[in-house]
Length: 260
Image (cartoon, rainbow, N blue to C red):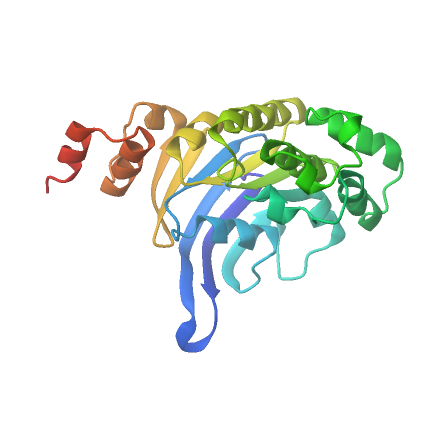
């Protein structure tokens, strides 16, 4: 059965000529409607590049990207961006510093020519747990967690079916990471959303996702279920190292990984 997202033999090259980098190599996976799928790996593994290719930010790819039964090419229609939205890692960088929350939430409504702007903005703020007193604040007047809630509200205001989440909590203090992850989980359940979550943290991915693909050097090296992650049931040494890192330093575990 085909998923709402189907990726087949995706290859992505960044740059040109002698400086070109083969960032993603022959990546394939499928995500069912309403599922949360995780891409995990260390920096440079290619996971964020996959997300950007799916979103349309990277156009120099080969292979097939199939979203909701439609094969995607380099030219995306308005409906594509209404149906699929992305939440970035750094909420301060992704929000315009001179735009109020109201302007940030109004802009996508104007682009897509949607009505009931007032109602949609109020609803979007309520969805992410922000009161109307935040509506006319600027990003510098918000905490990191509040900025990320605004970024999520901006993505949700178009009522998409798919959210692409690029390290959505890694720029936040540990104390607020769980709050944002819980919010994303609640939104997915309430609105039957489909997620692809990119993270370097296996603990975050295991909490959020039913299926996980482990990436290393541009390739998927292992596919695991949430139960396998929770039971540390990985066969690839690279995945075992990520699991050990997610649990903090353990002398015995580290010793086993160093034995060849």
